[in-house]
Amino acid sequence: MSDRSFDVVIVGGGLAGSAAASVLARDGFEVLVLERETTFRDRVRGEWLSPWGIVELDALGLRDVADSVPRVNLITNHVGFDDTISPDRADSEEFDLATLPGGGCLAVGHPEFQEAMLRNAVEEGATVVRGAQSVLVSPAASPAVSFEHDVLDEIGGSEARLQVDKSFQFGLLRFTPKAGLNWLSSQLSNHDFGVSDCEATVERPAYDLNDTFSIEGGFGLFIEVTRDWLVIANTGVELLDEQVTDSPIVEKDYVVKGFLAINYLF
View 1 (tube, rainbow, N blue to C red):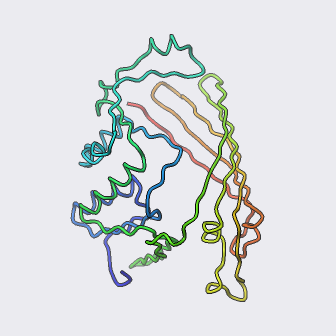
View 2 (spheres, rainbow, N blue to C red):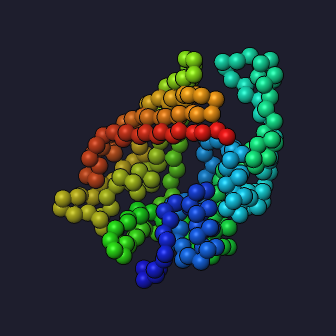
């Protein structure tokens, strides 16, 4: 594939990447999708697609893909149970989601939905490479993209994350401090932070790691500015394992993460 040219290269074949690939390929563009995972893994996350997300699926011509996922379920009623209101009040404020554009919310398995969307991108004409690692984009008049290919999942390894959080409500503001512990197997630790013998130089000696752990802390903010406007923010710091910080390719002993979103509900 080194001598091939594409109109568009998409790094990441999740829901957004595969949706973009499907639409672009359908419109006649030569599209390449580079996806790290050889098989999408289940992780702890929301598996709920909002009504406006369903509207976007319809507009992109991808609703049938979502509906093809096993055990997909259209939710048409919403009861906002929360630790700040009583169950009786929550029941009394039940909302009919079927009245919204999209007709409700979709409950759908995330990895199954990802697989279905990526298969659809291929059916639309996109080229998909799974097991793509270390993607490097070289900007220029004719930009180039390089990557390592692990299609046989030779890297292997596992990872696990444990997170504890507690929410505190202060009027329209919800404050959620969080703490977590992350584990990477030696295979993934070496892939991300190690230096193999064939990659070693005088300035960058070979380096091998065992299983590594990191500690993460931070907080989230959820602000209901008005009934329609929401502000969501998350920030945190991950303290890296000493084995990681001793690596010749790692400069800092921590990673700062952040996320900010402004939502309008309609």
